[in-house]
Amino acid sequence: MLTISDEEAGQRIDNFLLRVCKGVPKSHIYRVLRSGEVRVNKGRIDQTYRLVEGDVVRVPPIRVAEKQETVVPGAEFRILLEDSHMLVIDKPAGVAVHGGSGVSYGVIEQLRAARPQAKFLELVHRLDRDTSGVLLIAKKRSALTNLHEQMREGQTDKRYLTLVQGDWKNARQHVKLPLFKYSTPDGERRVRVQADGQPSHTVFSLLRRFGEFALLEAELKTGRTHQIRVHLSSSGFPIVGDDKYGDFPLNKALQKADGKRIAFKRMFLHAWRISFLHPETGQTVTLKAGLPDECAKFLRSLEGGAEGDLLPYNMLAGAED
Image (tube, rainbow, N blue to C red):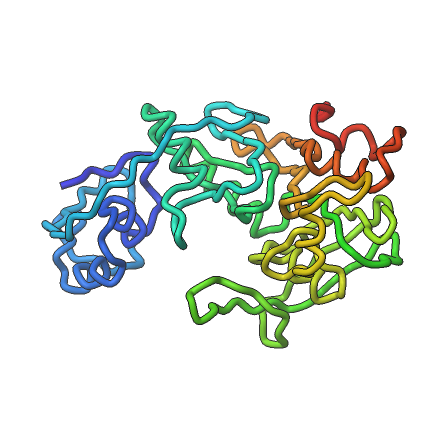
């Protein structure tokens, strides 16, 4: 018998059970819901019921096969903002935001392991494993729902820095291509442009050319999976280092140094800035995570290591203020 707290209120009963009964298959959770074995305040409910503070939930005994528990090493990340409602970090490239799809744990599991006293830590949004930059985490359910609503209503402003190959012409360009999610035969999640896909909109601004490459700022108007990556690759401008939608011979060539150009071994996509309304105060908050050193050094090497202004000062790591 579980009594619902203020932080747990507002969730659907199916999502609550999936969190409480970790490791239990989804199909089994829905089976016990349909059978009426789960009761709220001694009455039957369906899977769409939203929990209210003070509800008493009966969770039936559920047996699951024992599996080896993964030990998650606790980790902290560079903090851009932290208060009682939220935590905002600068996620490094190469780290998944959560476990699954062949990854046993990610940022959120590591933060929970490092902060066992935290009652609530949930991702507000996601970044691809190979994308670095600003990541929002809610410390209260009220903050999570508030920020999700802002994202649905288009009140947040997310900007990314990315380097593409090709002769990019326009100072500012809108790309509106519908995106369709599918899975490869081996279960990998992919996205392609397709007429019946979800409406998707990205605005790209040219910041600077580096020979055969162009550095762009991408402004998300919608937040679809792999949106920037697919919008660029479908437009003929693959992101440097993109191992799913990029130019694979180019990526391989760039992994080795050539003259003054240094080797580059990651995807050049970085969530550098976000603006949103603080879930408690309603004040506008703008946070920046400057371009990581490995990306800045690579750009510098494309210019033969020449000194001078690489980018506006506040786009580089260590210059967020």
